Image (tube, rainbow, N blue to C red; front, side, top):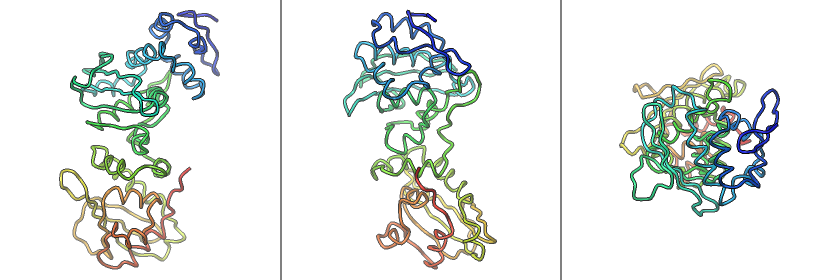
Length: 328
């Protein structure tokens, strides 16, 4: 089958999608015509069916790459969830790099459900947020294959400015042919978070936990914590542990209370002043490492990362009844 810009088409299951292979030899004008005319949902399906190695080979050509990036960004609205797109306001800049070297810089102004492409924006022009990542990761995020929140946590995506605006952009993409969100960057499974944090630098994690993403990460981790309590280990355990989390840029201290009784756990946000066996005070990024198995509680206490007031044995017992998610 032949199509726009001289491209051929492949069948992926029950969907006919463009064959991206022709981009290896296409001229700049042919590539521009392809990205301007190809069905947006079919393009997303083709990208998802292409391996990382193949995709890099197709879009890394210096003459094709700018056309590809502009073509993808300029048509985001066609494969976005309309309700989420309508909520976006602001200017988002994308700095696409290869091994630390800037390859492409583009920006999009979002307003009232529409978008305006601003190619090759300079450093001096105002933006609400800047996203820095690799070309390949950019393509995977905007095709709805990667969770922008997890990429941000892991340090594979760097965000300067309004983090929540940046992550909202990562959550507008729908599954091709449906109205469903492909990936919600605010939906964080603790196992996925544990995997994302496996090799992240401490300074980056501190940065993440001083951004607007902080409250979402903490709320999701605490909300899901009861799912990982081992009923057998917790069967005869009765304890109440408070957590005080520091490092919020606005000076607030987030408080949570975890109770274990009858083999199950409950979590309450806030602090009503009830009797607790112990209270753990720590920086939010240290708690995140603790909750995902990257900080041993005994080590954390000995190094002063976890400060315990009350019954230290009870505080340590909490960790013993929770099966910490193991990184995939």
